[in-house]
Image (cartoon, rainbow, N blue to C red; front, side, top):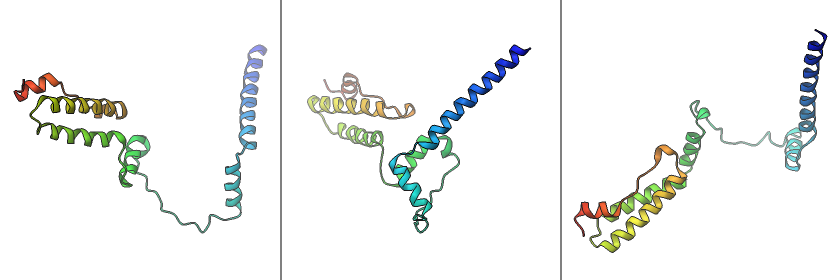
Amino acid sequence: MKNEQFEKRNKAENIMMGDQSTSRFDQYYEDHITSIVRRAEKEGQFEGVKGKTIQFDSDMAYNPEKALNKVLKDNGVLPRWMELKKEIESLRKDLEIFNDEANIKKTIDLINKKVMDHNLSCPRTSHLGGINLQSYLNKRGIK
């Protein structure tokens, strides 16, 4: 019985010591910028600062990707993969104009490269498929 009590007490002391050492480090360490900001807060230098309040949607708290995309959209910035998707759509429209195999091949190679870049940088649910040159030529009736 005494052995079990000793082990419990020893575990509790180790946990407390671990917590104390962590809290001591956090308590005493402060980088230069943080100390400047805290001093300014204590002196009341931020009291007159006006800023735009941020409204958080409760759904956004559990979906950081959605929150990031919303912030980017609100500020007129598109993630790289969305820009690539627009470029790919434009190239696919341009592809319909070409009738010679050389231009079609160059455009399909460019589309497939952009599709790969897109798929490497976007969420899995937004992946796009590339274009098979031979299938496309057969579909268009170009030999």
